[in-house]
Picture 1 (tube, rainbow, N blue to C red):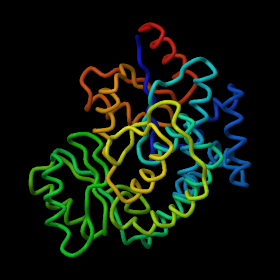
Picture 2: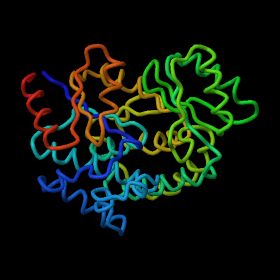
Picture 3: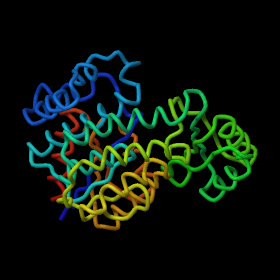
Length: 313
């Protein structure tokens, strides 16, 4: 029996035009876009389909846009009978996973992630923070580099995307020192990332406090399927676990490699990336030996995924 897991991407996977073909071909997907527009009070779908790219790239727009695209694509999959037995999402993608698991209502989630984007952007003045991807060093070596590079400032591990791709975040100067140290220690390649804020580090604590107030008024339910969470690669199975881990996630590292391993340990044999881009499908192959990764970002991808899952049934 094929156990299907859905993986949902986070910020950085957005692209102008994402979801447009599903909007045109799937009634359920179209309804998701319409609900997003209604919940936010502006035409998010038009921004997603037509741009401009610079406006879509603003964190407060990117987060609801990627969520909406992912949930719409999952709705189109459900329309064709492709549904997950469990799910996980990278950072923002955890909200997509919780919506598809019916732990969060979509209308609530799209409003919350727009606020989340604003809070994360506002937590640190533009230009003060930075993020960088460090390649070719293991987690212990990167943690040591961060400890030495801090010099009274903040720099720490933000994403463990795979064993050899680790993202750090913090004050710009400290991140730059960490990149230089990593290179000196034999790291293959380290690159500064084009992001507007240093996500998933201690500098995001003010964003978590504001998010707590927003989440406070939202009702949650027990997930219909297990959701593997970013903070500890544990499994959220009850409503009581939803909010605390979403709040911790804002200023904590995304332990993505551990998440994917946990999804596999829970029995998943086929991983389907639902949403714009194919970043998670690429990371999967470096993390779980022999993993079968599929991606659905357009109707052609859905047809391929349906055929592949059917062939293994």
